[in-house]
Image 1 (cartoon, helix red, strand yellow):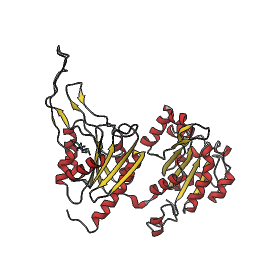
Image 2 (cartoon, helix red, strand yellow):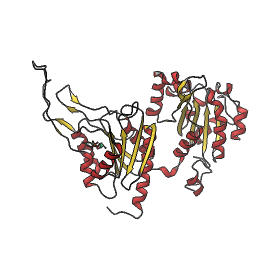
Image 3 (cartoon, protein in one colour):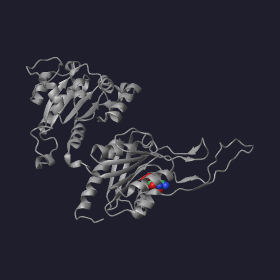
Length: 421
Ligand code: C5P
């Protein structure tokens, strides 16, 4: 943490970058030329910026330009000697509040995903405990390549680095597609959001459900749905990163630093959620729970019969959200989800009321490429007090961050005046 930082000062609440130390890593892609503007914007927002260039980055932008913009020495070599027994760059890696790498090339992502540290920047990333944020920029084919996608997944899911997604547009080589570095405004906003100490969910107990339930028909078959669990996992990750005590009830197996209760059926999910509900401050029910299950589950695999048809009798599953909406305390918040194929606003509004929710997140499942299985979604968010927001296509993690902000606002509102249990 930077020594100059006074805790929770007024200026900081208005400007989360004030007095923060940011390591600005620049790797060797054409978007490196934007690093000068970014450095200047960060510095003018009050941050202490130290630029670190990879050898290839120096082909696109000079240390002199970045030194002028940051008003600090620019670091380029692992082997430079500054007369100190402890190298300055390791000191910097330790005291940084945030490491921001913009642009992050495919090569840099591959190195970081594999712990390679053969230059100053990658060494500093390994040496820091600060949050690492990456703004990838590259040719769309390179971004789409499974190797790059795999590296991004490792960096995001295993190392918890925050990826600032690249944008769709015309890239430097003339190709069109995803791969353009996020705009400097988006990068600044994401950095500000990350550094804002007022966005903390410290001490809040959050119960999140994720994935689609599976209702067995026989030992090999089940009734399932297309939910990938990505939204719920993004929600749990975002809340955990903000200090909440998260419990995830999931049908998808994930390795996380918070408790994950693995379930399969709606009944198992109901049991887990009901057990945890009393202790939670908020329930975020993103799971796609099967509305029906087979009346009876065959102990043996159902064989092909002579007849062409087979009749599967179904019965209704409990509506977990509906049940908990009836018993929730005044100090608890419930967020539900509504995946709709028509009349999104009408159906979501009706569910918000009927299930006694505080917030409902609705998405139109007929829109191609987003929603089920995708990393992105576009949603409407309705609140019990009549609030309505449209979030256009964005990563599920960004939607989760927004929901964390909504939760924060509602927790704050609950506390003044204090609501008794
Ligand atoms: O009524 P509908 O299934 O569209 O409602 C969706 C919301 O209700 C989601 O938040 C989902 O997690 C929850 N739900 C539930 N139990 C069910 C079905 C849905 O909790 N049996």
